Image 1: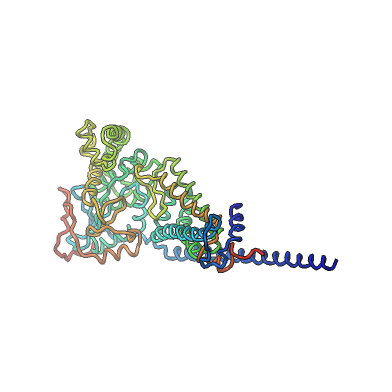
Image 2: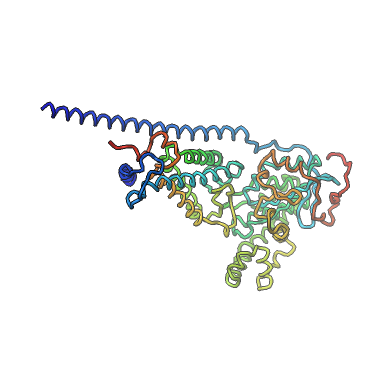
Length: 336
Length: 191
């Protein structure tokens, strides 16, 4: 009997010890999870506060006068003080590209300031990497670029460029409607009806491109070009191929749509490979050197520009445009 | 979780109790308990590397991180901004926990859940015919339709999800804080 109860006693103690161990283990587990949650809260919360505090995206809108804008032969626009010696900042952007809008938002003010202070020669080079994306993205991209080019005819490219990026449509949205494009022209002071006319006729080219020309070209190319070769071909190559294979692109002749497509082909040829390869938009080059993450920093970007040595623009001013190419000689021209 | 308990029960009987490579004569039965903590360590470090890298590449350019989220066209601007800022931080926090091996089971499960959310997001972008980069490692946004890689992205995330699930099932691993705390010991005597 007593032997029996002693055994029961021992058994009960054993059970309690196990229970105790289990409880201790659960407490340790809860402590570990609590610590883990604390780590997450600390990293996420602390980091978020720091990021909010150092959020330098919206620098103040530039209010001063812009440096002179000079239309170039290839349809690009140089914004610089006359005769200034400064690093050349090439900005390749697509009006449908969301990162480009982001870049504009972060560094648009810096670009204007740097140019106005004679610290940079800013070379705006609109391209269309979305041209072959169909409607609506491809059409938006081309329509926006053609309208910006038309605004450059009136010396209002930079102002117009800002408005376009401010009103950028989403990737699946129809945007940059003809009526809006015309109204924005008036907003920056272009009242010539020829501008509206130009925007309309460019839109017709865009519609032809997106609805008929490119689908035909693409179908034919898929059928006739081996896939591995097709994959290496860019839109410019395809258009050239179509020219020799019965897909007529003459409807684009003389249009700004054609010009922006040529500009896109040109940048691919200019920066074909290596560290500085043109891989998409926005691509910002300082004297031909591709910028990295500085592109999206309102502080690192101007620093990188200021650290660079003077460069030369590789395009020539369009004929008939009065302004001279920024020359290599230092100039004492007053700030504009 | 039945596998987990089975594993714990089995490893409880294993000889490899005191931790430092005592396992002798690895029979078919004793090999798994000896190998599993190393496998879990590898899973921890692998997943920590992936998450840490993904978080870091997004964090260096917060604007693009926000942009990547916006490209999915699922949320409003404010929410996009919030996610764009906090997601990379969350990824880094998970990476830290995995690296140190704290609360491994929960962290593994949460990581797997996060991957499931990513997969759902990518699948929805795919289904809606968006042309975007997944933004998994910093560079997101709209891309040329020919350059989307949804299938590949999903396959990769499935792999990462498997690592997380592995840890949720077999959290016991070498060189972990959990071990110091005496969690998931498997080596503790059961009596």
